[in-house]
Image 1 (cartoon, rainbow, N blue to C red):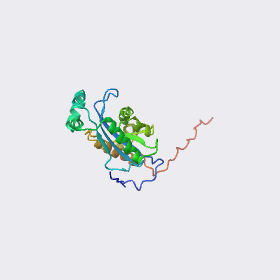
Image 2: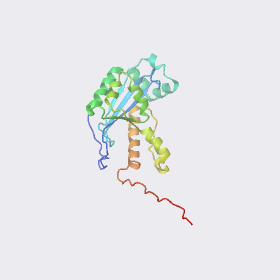
Image 3: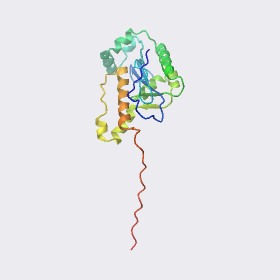
Image 4: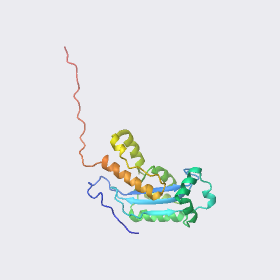
Length: 217
């Protein structure tokens, strides 16, 4: 698998932490962590400054039988059928164990040190909940316990950033295709980095205002 490093952030000042980010998006048969299954995983790894280390990324579609896919709710049934994912799941020969082993090998190839990489994505706590189960849990154990959730940055921006900042947030197509979702998450993170987390200004603490005391008469 070829390695391509993007250079659009080469002129950015070095951040306090350049620890890598492991962007993962999963498609599931539903949102019930106890009963639903991961059917697709895509992973792209970036530097802390959001430079993609491997354009190809990691991709796995996990096989489940028709009987399992028939248990999906109406939304998942419609969405995964329209995207072609349901058909791909039925045709796949990859088991969950094989997908987990391949994902672990991919992550550790780029990030051999334990607890250095952070899981990243949009509402990635949901993906993390599924990935903490077997057979994927050793991937999560390899990563830091912290996560970078772009959705949380979005919510903070909606509340505390200027309206012009919020209005120009990159729009998402909502395709529910794992690779597209990850690339949109990275694009959104880059936007926030440029307009909110600009490392080019000095932080000046507010001056203490003198206490106003009423003049005695």
